[in-house]
Length: 327
Ligand code: 8YV
Image (cartoon, rainbow, N blue to C red; front, side):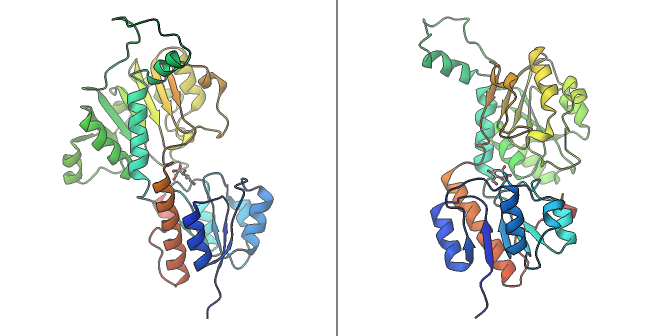
């Protein structure tokens, strides 16, 4: 029988996923879920046939230059592949796959939660109750802003962006989007979404802006200081994609000056570090990268990883191959 591939997994995954992996592959699992060090990663690329990294692992050109002859596949446990140098991997004949689709709805739910929480001051209300500071109802106290009838601008209209659009539409928002490519007419009509070729022009007119594009060299600081200044006074910003897409310091300045009314952030530029200025603001809701964090989703992601490895090892094209041309 063919030798089973050695699969190195960098983090603790759900038990069912690990059990299935043990059945199918020779595995080196991370029982204690201690984040991989640089040395662990070098050791892994030197010896493994397949590596299963997560968002907390960097596999850059320097690491890949130490890859052993066996390494043929990096099967990312996650959708975003900005942790991996896909171009260098590809040049070295190492395939990269991700786990699209299975975390779309969960991430869109969390995005909607932030779109609701920030304008309606949910976190502030919870804090008042927890601190026992509620002295009674008042007609003019704790007033937020309604989202109904407001304009939502979605940056990046892929699977997650579209799932957010469907939800926001049900909440009475009008849907606008900017994307590299315009959606097919039928899809656009189904979502009742308005396309903006110019991001600058869209930003100037939105009440809420939500980020759903991947982090690539082209989208790094896409929401730069200049662009954030174009936003409508009193607008809100939500990010469940990648922190690097927004210039975080510039965002803080716009929040401090009151030009922007608030932000809901699940992702940060230097995770897990969070700028203390964000932590001390009332008008931001912060979450620790929980967008796709459901038990069901993690199991689905694990299954996707397994299918990608299995298909690849059987000599076929894995369903979720990421090619440099797709970035
Ligand atoms: C995951 C994510 O938690 O898939 C992504 O791109 O950011 C998250 O949903 C993470 O990537 C797991 O590696």
